[in-house]
View 1 (cartoon, rainbow over the protein chains, first blue to last red):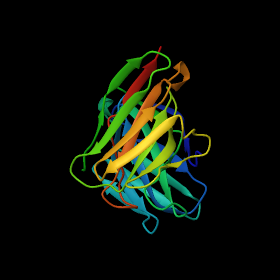
View 2 (cartoon, one colour):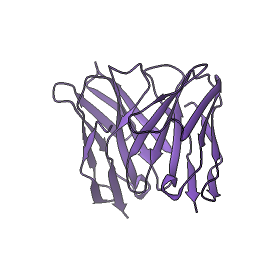
View 3 (cartoon, chains in turn brown, orange):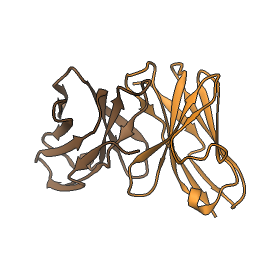
Length: 113
Length: 115
């Protein structure tokens, strides 16, 4: 069953602007992972953040995690047209044996040149 | 990162036939692999957990006799869609990771179209 919810469902911005996507989940987690998917393609792993971490950076990406609110955010700074894709959060719940991911609904990001 | 491959990337078949999809971890061993299904404009839905050397674990609502999973080795899991029907048309994606609780790497997906 779906655990995560993401907002917004769709986001349209101009190149150079920042894009923020939010993810909420329902149960305790081991980690939360963010993925990117270009239309009709497989998923590309972006960042994994563990339950004891609050923030992680990777290049232009910044992920935060608030376990008390069961929420995470993905910030893409200085966006580019090539960032246009769907972005998903996925949680590895503590009740799992590990590895099984439950995905959020995704945010469709459009970056206009 | 680690590499997961899938084959075929695209398949078109007639209703009633069976289709086998392979998922391979190319540079690591995986005792567990996962199979997901994605319909257009929707998120990924977990179908089942593939366990090397034992039976797969299916999510609620997924028919195990319809979607046969075999995890014959530490680098290969197969999903067979038996007696496929048009409603089985979807994007099937597998994932695997070198260690439990760590990053899951996804295959490029298999687009199945049942006529």
